[in-house]
Image (cartoon, rainbow, N blue to C red; front, side, top):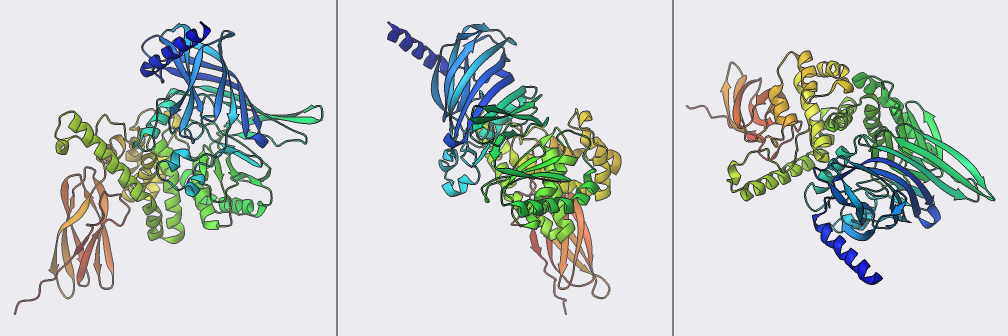
Length: 592
């Protein structure tokens, strides 16, 4: 009979799982005790979580998800066990590509906006795992430098959702091979947890005094030691109140500290010279960042922190004003990373396209200051392909959606319900980081550096309650309406422009002078002000031309010698196709 009851319960879970709304509940509070055992790569967690039913209907079933290398041990409500079954659930929000999902049936339904508090327990190991990347074709050696999360004997670094689900979450499946599925899932999770309180106490033991486990809490952490017989217990308490888009992470290692304003650096033993190199780089770039963005305005989390990663080829990771990165002797690379980090420290915005886009723009502007415009454009060019490919993938998804609705794909609107890809709403990194960088660069080229600096100086994150707030700041300083630009690039995703010179007519003037009349066509759905360059044998002349979407514009350029070609766009405006940007000029021979 007992077997029959368990079997029936299991069947009920499997049937209900098909109709389960995995995102019905919002996690409003975490209060967890987490024990770390680096020698065994183990993690054991106990504590309480509070959930709120944010769906429109009562819910009797819920799911809780953790990394597939962790196991659920207990779920209790009001001190009584809750019946659940655990199953693997494929999702790339975890580095293993799979979650351990507990499907639970509650004693009674939770009404809409109702809450419940659960006592939970889970444990297991967190090894380095690159499964989600290798199954989409990434070489394992490359993948290890991207998904470097693990609890290790000598070094531990574990990021949260999107990398490792080391704390309970609940999302629908996300797949890296399905367009922007992972980004969209993470964006929904982040929005649901904007006001979530997250408190955690880490502990670890050792026969000698163990190093502290540290986290990325903007409020700092409380730490201490306790002696337990001949062993020692080190503990750290971290809080996010609220979570506000942060991804909690934890680290442990044999760190030493270097505090040299404007950064505080935690480096691994024997790497002091590399830490000093980064500190010097931060001091070198600080005047540039201050010139653009001022100084950090009293935010508790504004002090820049650098924590070294043990893998010298690991991809850096930034969260708030903390950067996890390898340290090396490359001063130029250190300066670029420091520019990005100090920009975050000095200028905060709740909008990712402003916060991240400005930090990337600052790197390009610094390259320009140090090595000239061409060097800056080369740096930006590293992002161009990713932006163009993301826009292409989106356009294909929109055409597929239009076809499903029975519409003519060729005439389908640029904006669709596939996903909000405007800069003000996107969860796609290629957009709010790389495309946003280009937007800031174009704004600077159009309105001038001093005007943009004045507009940024007037920005107040607490006042940014409408998408048009920044536009109005820029218009107040530039005395010009920029609605068309923000509509094409910020408020909507209209794709990218596609410029070509449709004609160029040279007319000889007195002596060797020429006037060339150039017509530039924009075949894309987004307009821009683009540089147009007339080249001769010994010089070149550049002027700027505003070309709106699906239209043409004309400009006249004077030349003191015979014109040879016209180049439209020097790489400062992202395009869908840059293979048609050069136009050869033919000078008609004089008739006898």
